[in-house]
Length: 188
Image 1 (tube, rainbow, N blue to C red):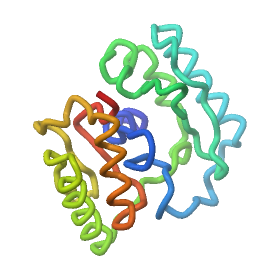
Image 2: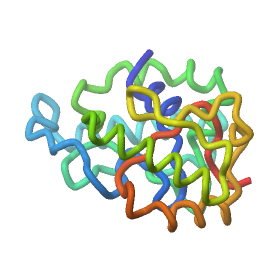
Image 3: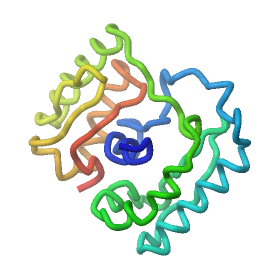
C-alpha cells in the first residue's frame, strides 16, 4: 500500500481538535531532509499533478496541494469537503492516478508520529473521557495510537455537536493528534 493510500485510509480528519495528521500538539520532529534529493517545488509540482489527475477523473472538488512550513506535501480540506472520504469510495480514481503517487519521494509526506507508552495511556484516558461526554461508542486506541471506528455506532460519522462537546471536555487530557480509522469521522 502506498503512503498516500495509507494516509487516505488511516488518517481520517475530524474538523477541529479531534484529529489531524498535522493538528496541534506533539508531532514528529521536522525532518531536515524533507527536501533532500527532490526540492520543495518539485514535490509541490508532483502534488499538483496528482490533484489534477484526481480532478480529471471526477474528484472535481479536490483541494490544491500545498507545502507545510517543513516542506511536506499536504492537501488541506476546503469548505468542509472531506476529499479523503470521497476518494476512498472511488477505487477507479485511485488506480488511475496511482502512477503519479508512485513517483512521490519517500520524504514527500510528514513522518507518522510515534507514540510512547505514556502517550498511549493518555489516549486511553482521552477515549474514556470522550465516551463519558456524549460518544459512548468511541473505542480505545490500538497499539499504534489509532481509534478504529469499524463496527462502532460512529463508523458512519460523528455528529458535529457531540464531537465538539467531547473535544472541549477532553482537551486537557490529550490535545495532540487523534488518528481515526475505519469510519468517515466527519459530521453526520
